[in-house]
Length: 413
Image (cartoon, rainbow, N blue to C red):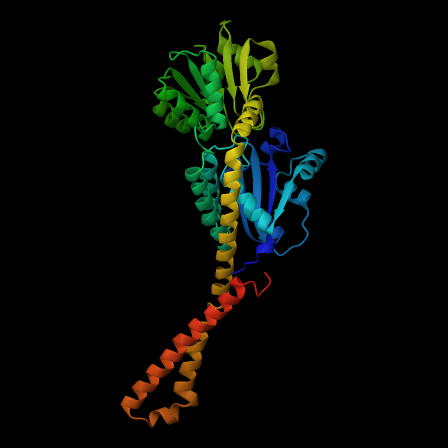
């Protein structure tokens, strides 16, 4: 099993340095992940690989012996439809973390310190699901297993021992609060386009406050039906959207489409001569509502970009908590390094007991077999006990000595 901390690296493509539409072009569904990640693993000789995808970040975690790797080739592998200009822009914006810095970054991501909205708890679930998917498909190994275990532990401690997640404000909750601030009434007519995780979470907020007059449109009707069941609404295939004539007050759009699903023709059809001001919540990455719709219609438009200012204000309010979080992360980093060193010893000495046992059996059955056969049964029993005792003590002392050497930094990692 391959465990070299210095070979652990992360490529991060996030909202800090990239527009959301370009991040969206690196986002993969599960089928694409299996294909692309296995391709990356073979092409770049990655020992382990983990892919994390959220609404405003794509990150690749990997263990590799390669000291140099071509970031542009990795980007191209993720999406071979990108233009050269797009690849160059993404490459220039890519953040690269290595070794201890990569471990610290992982902790911060799961604790939401790197999120667009600091304190959103959803990220810890997204990290766990990303690991479970990659682990199930044989993409990860022992190092990432240990890392994610300590990462989840770190995030939970931060959420419970600090106020970083007090009154959490995720992108969805920010959008929901913006909706309430516009004075939308409980009997408002809602249209959901898309039935994924984001719209499902938005629907949960709305249902808690008795917003139940809704319909759901989705490419897969069965998924639309699942969300409609939760909200008490009706489900339709996305192809029926252009034929829907009952108008609306709020349009909530979030799909995996890389192109707008709401153009001006569809939007005008949905209005059905209704001229009142509408609220459109577009949480797609890239945007799911065409820019023409916003320009030509009487709309209160809410999208991820419009929520950035609120997110930045949230960050300022939580600066004191971030200091506390950093202290916890530093302690957890030291714990992980200790765990990592102990694991290295376990792996290095894992075969030792078997080898000692094989030597003992060789001595008893071949090298000293004649001498031993000449002993009476009582003497044989005593000899067996003595050798077994020495065997156990030797294994324990050897392991402890090696462990002490590493943990006392006598060996340079």
